[in-house]
Amino acid sequence: MEKGDFHTALHRWAATPMLTAFLIAPLAFTAARVAAGPLPDSVAQSAATGLWLLLCGLAVIACLFKKSLDRPERESLARPMAASALFGVSVACLFVFMAPALQAYSGFAPYLRETSPAIFFLFALAWTATFGVPGRADIQRPAAWLGALVVLDALQALLRMTPQRFLGDPDMLATLLLIGLCADLKPAHHETDRNGLALRVWIMLGLLATLSRTGLFTAAWIHAFFGRGSAWKRLPYASLCAAAVGASFLLDAHFGLGGDRYMEYWVWLECFQLLAGPGRLYTGFALSHPLPVLPPLELMGLWQTLFSTSPLNGLFIEQIPSFWVRAVMAWGIIPP
Image (cartoon, rainbow, N blue to C red; front, side, top):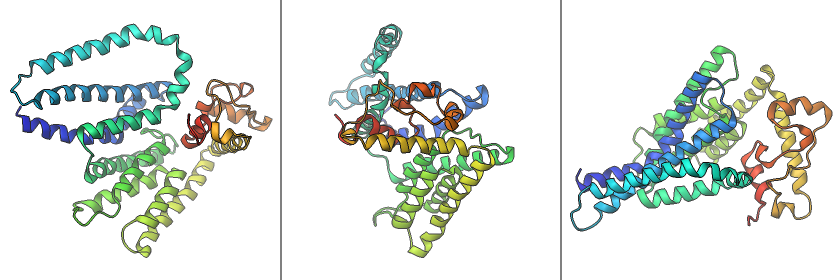
């Protein structure tokens, strides 16, 4: 491979995390759910972490080749290939021999889990510094494909008269589609908008099909204030998002899921009351100890449908079903 061709391929790698998040991960989890049924949350999280670690490993190997080809003297590929093989052996040994030792430090697992947003942010910085920033179209295209998949997933749930979705958590899917929606906002004068309408339609339809209340509210707000066209052209989609929020409440009542949602909202309110304590909004709570949250007797049954622990043991921060509430409860608004 010529040096220029290799650097062109590396630049195309800038969009690889987008393809992983928007397409590879949802399709992989869909295949696993179809083949083996619903996956436990711990298995799904471990699989997702393994997928991103694999992507990091491939990026390291690509950097080894890039460093070799950037040198002014002509160098064969034997050296980067040997370094890649040594890296692969080192990673394999790390997983084999370090796994038993890490069990002794299992108490740090909650801290590692709650710092994962910061870790992924550093990963994004390192990726863009190495391979460049993905273009607008590199984000729009996989988001549109994901939107089409979400629509198909919603249709199969509708035909089967079940709330089960194969692609995963609707709120997470809505977050990914919101990234695609933001990438589709008004382009600069020097940017082209080729095939933008078709991509935009699929992203918007996908957001409607998620029926994620937080996602739909955010989509309506983004489109109403920052979307393309005049205010009258932006109003219909914002109204559709509001109607979809109402439809989500009706569907929850139809499938008997209203209690689960109510339990989530009750947990949020309890967390807000705890944060109202002296200094708690700034410092947060300990990750290793349960929060003093005890549901009333009429909610004990709903507790068991959402959480695997007994309500008498309190609520752990990692069990809070909201990223932002969980982050504030863990670290406060002034992280250490």
